[in-house]
Length: 107
Image (cartoon, rainbow, N blue to C red; front, side):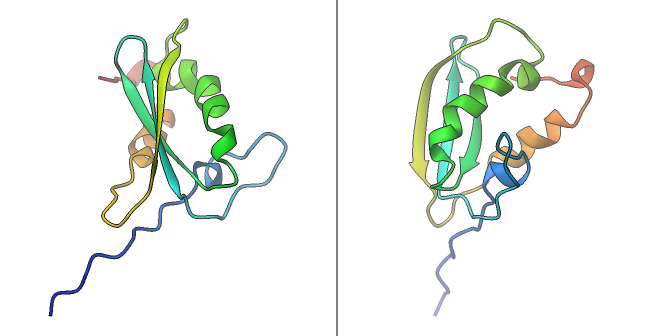
């Protein structure tokens, strides 16, 4: 009998980036948030239920850092519950944030 896929344990983005004035989060992410920019580019971050209300604020604070551009704005945000088979999206983004700004390229 084939085994059913198990739910992937994805860390809350605040495990890597501390919430302002708080310690790092050890909770698993329950939601994926996609942030869409006015020019159509987008990025994903995963959040636990406790940090979901901070999702838009974190994304807005990171825009210039993520894309190495100024004057960007988020026009749409979509939240989805993380279910079985989910593939984490923020790992790649967080790796890019560790690169020097001059080497970052986003599609």
